Length: 82
Image (cartoon, rainbow, N blue to C red; front, side, top):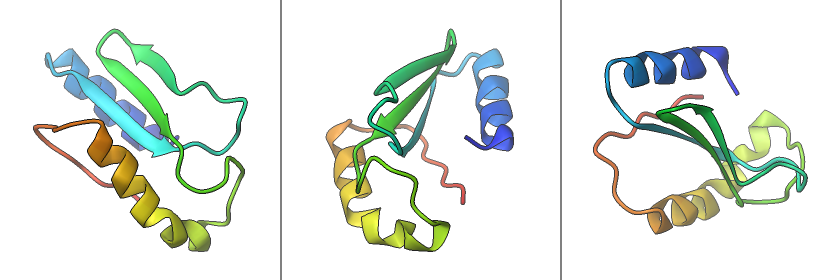
């Protein structure tokens, strides 16, 4: 996970927001959810193989990622980071 994304999430949590960071699961050994901070959850989505994938190949999993994100429900704000 990108350190900038984590710092931004923790700053939002410190301001009273509840934050979920969503990323693709890159290993079957990774838990589906990890609590990083009392108000920050890191959620790993099953989209594509549970393996490391070269950055240029992530586009192949956009539809699967979108479907997994849609199944989670609605969010007030969504920020995307590459």
